[in-house]
Amino acid sequence: MAGYVREVAKRVFAQEFNESNLTFKDGDEQYSPQYLLTPTGAKVNRLFIVGTLTEKEDIGSDTEYWRGRVSDPTGSFVVYAGQYQPEAAQVLVECETPSFVAIVGKPSTYTTGDGDILTSVRPESIQVIDGETRDIWVLDTAKQTLDRINALKSTEPNSVKAMEHYDPDINHYRGMVLHALRSLNENE
Amino acid sequence: MKETAKGIKGKFSELGVEIPAKEIEERLDTLVTKFKVPLDEARRSVVNYFLKEHNIARNEFYTGQSESPLLSISDISQDGKWITVKGKVAQLWDNSHETISQVGLIGDKTGTIKFTKWTSAELPDVVEDKNYLFKNVVVNEWGGKFQINLNKNSSIEEIDEEIEIGSSSVSFTGAMVDIQSGSGLIKRCPTCNRALTKGACTEHGKVDGVYDLRIKAVLDNGTTTQEALLKRELTEKISGMTLDSAIALAADALDQGVVLDHIKNGMVGRYYTVTGPRLDRYILVESIELQSNPDAALLEELITAAEVA
Image: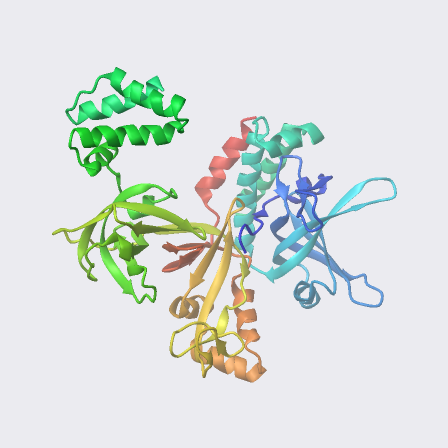
């Protein structure tokens, strides 16, 4: 498998993820990977998120199709798992709410009738985990988000693209990171 | 052409032979302009002419050109580069090609590398566990891995120094995002120890396999991914399951897959630090540690960094 490189799982807070609306492909081929670019310039084909599963619901008609909400300090990720994600769907069926979960998944977008773009996560795997891991994730994600914010003014291609498309309010995202970090201190 | 002539003159004066620049230029010019020989070839021909004229051995001229640098094995990173390596012969492998006289692994304290000694090199044989200086060997990249080739310009000198073969140990911290198929309870070929697929060994066909436990994990730090290989001992420790209990679990469920599921449920989604030598795309894990607490110092540092807007 020459040239095959596993896509890195990016760390993005829910708020930033939900404020993303730019998708694109690398290359023109049918199976070229699809990416979501976030306002701080994370080029996402795969995500690693850890949060609290607060709600779950089977919204399928004939076959089971599960929707879950996973909350982090900044907002919630919407997660959909159906027959093509059998392992992830099974975990959603079995686990209780609320509980801490770790999810590896792909970003997915949906354009509403009004032209709004909604983001969600299609999980590859869901695992029930502990609160410590969740805190480590918040710290990890804060660090990586800050690194991206600090790189926004650089010539790094994803930063340039994010600046062009979103013209992000840097203080808005700094504030988000700070809020998430401070929430860790409050736990103690 | 003037440049070329100058270069040649410089080289020869290093060897203690002064040749008038004009003479060199004239010879080059004749070849290039009149006989339409490419400059490189002309240069070679002119050099050879003067070497003969002044009775200088070819080797002397060309080794003077650049003594191959002595590199540590872990620093070998450039395809086609001529280097010198000091190392111990770690293993000699069977080889079936008559064009190859010896093939095996040599190592120094930074790692090991495959070497191939060609028959045409006409070099003396090396012996396992002895230490040598391998001069003027060529680096070759194949399938993303480096190896070195010994050809007839190379030399081997046995040395007195005792070299310890180490493997540069690396650490990687990240979230475990996947455990690959071929993990959990597997069977190995009793002859060659390869993992069996569907009860068959790629080398020895259908065999009665021997059970083993292992984990092929993918760690991800948000920037890169790293594959990690855990052998039975560590797998048992980290999964809290012995080989026997894994076999019992699988027998109970009539499915080897439950062992993998059990391991996945316990490990995927958590943060680990693994340490061990790097081999190919894997880290051969010697120690693995679960990150169980957020780093308080990092938290303070990040809060400060985020506040300074």
